[in-house]
Amino acid sequence: MGKTLNDLIAFLDSLHERAPLPQLVAELADLRVDCDEFGEHVRFSEQQYARNLVRKGPWYHLLVLCWKNGQRSPIHDHAGSTCGVRVLRGVMTETTFVFTPNGHVKAMGSRELAEGQVCGTQDDDLHQISNLQAGVADLVTLHVYTPPLVWMGTYSMYDTSRGQERMLLEFIDAAGI
Ligand SMILES: [Fe+2]
Image (cartoon, rainbow, N blue to C red; front, side):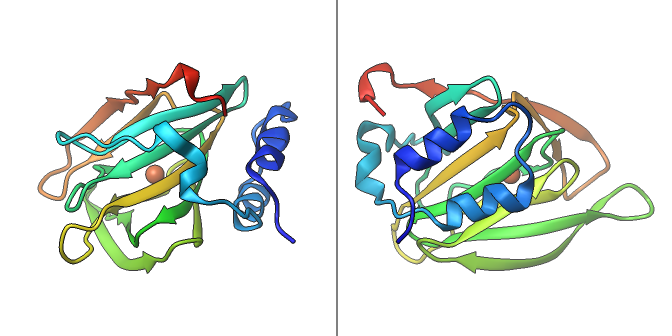
């Protein structure tokens, strides 16, 4: 069967607290959704991967992220939020990291997620999302953050410095989702 985008939105609107990660991942995995349903929310930027806010509520942000070939997120945490991701178009590379005893981060491994596949992260989980497909292939991913993630901690492969990145959102008002 599978659930529609409206079913997902009904679930998110019904939240009165942070959604548990297994439930969020299950909701995204059950979804029968096509990238085209997101219409003009599928918008890319030449500068960096683009975050397009589809809908928001007190306990969530629903976003479409658009990645031109070669665009990558910083290595980041999830700062008290639960995050579920579903690949809408293309193949996504997720690299996970852990802290080392001397305060650096090291990569644990990378995996490729195909269209329709889902992953989940929360709190201090560290990862990096990349579009490393051959040629010029674009990547489009659907993200739920509960509660909304307004900033995230960022990490360097070269030293122990920590940063904070505010989530810059583009909200396209008239898209009707
Ligand atoms: Fe993330």
